[in-house]
Structure formats: structure tokens, C-alpha cells
Length: 174
Image 1 (cartoon, rainbow, N blue to C red):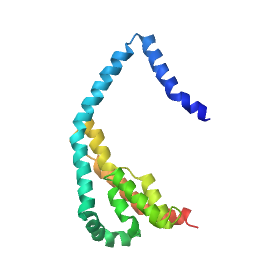
Image 2 (cartoon, rainbow, N blue to C red; image 1 turned 30 degrees about the vertical axis):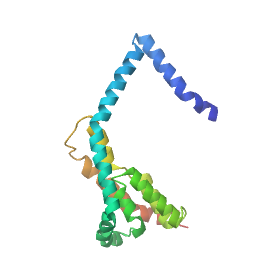
Image 3 (cartoon, one colour; image 1 turned 90 degrees about the vertical axis):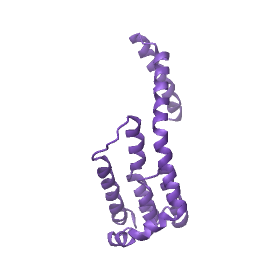
Image 4 (spheres, one colour; image 1 turned 180 degrees about the horizontal axis):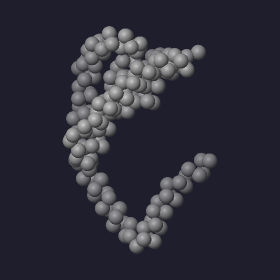
């Protein structure tokens, strides 16, 4: 099986080149045009991504994340969300790397087979880095008004935060 996967990408590239040749398209020139467009897109979205990463790092370094966790702790307690995964729940819509760091710390401290570790795993698998995705995808095509995207995505993330402890108790805790 490993040998098949070694050939997938080269075969795909060869098929694209053959298709272009069959259609009379100069594949190399089209590749160069695409690379130029990609570079322009990278330049367009870089300021937004830098701002997002700066804000996340400032939030963590300043202790703001701890303050936010303590402010939402009555709500998380009421909803049955373990306090140990609250920082993960707060960071996961904002920063994938920040959430991954929190997730790693949770697994080191509590273990992957613990209730807390399983809740964190469900959250990591069922949420999206909402703000990052909106910044990246909408920024790449210069959309400024996201309309219903942000509220809908945050509702989906919030649903995951609420349901993960319940589903872990229901299906994964033995």
C-alpha cells in the first residue's frame, strides 16, 4: 500500500501535463501565472494573518486568557464543560497553533485516555479555527463583510464545546 501512495502525486502531475498538452494549453506558462497570482494573494493576506497571530500571542503572554477563563467559568460550570479545557475552547476558534499547544499540554498533564484528554480530543477534531479561516479565505478574495459566516461558525464551535463532554461521557468513558 505504501508504494501506491508514492506514485499518486507524480501520476497526478503527469495527468495534468498530458491534459494540458491534449487541450493545446502551455502548461508551464499557466503554472507561472498561477504562481504569480498565489504570490499576490499571499501579499494581500499577510497583514491580516500577522495581526491575528500578534493578538493571540499578546492574549496568552499578558495573562488575558486566564482572565477570560475566570470570567466564563460560571457559564462553563453551568454547561458542564471541564475547567481544564476552557482555555482550549477559547483559543480553538482563534488560533490553530495556540489551540494545538493547549491540547498538547492537556494531553501531557491528564493523558490521552482521561476524560479531560478525550474531551479535548473531541474539541480539536470538531472545531475550526474560525477567525483564522475567515481571515485567510475571505482576505484572499478581498471580502470585507462576512455576513452570517462568523455567527454561524461560532455557533458551530460553541455547540462542539457544549456537546463534547456529554458525548465523551455517553460514548467514550468506560
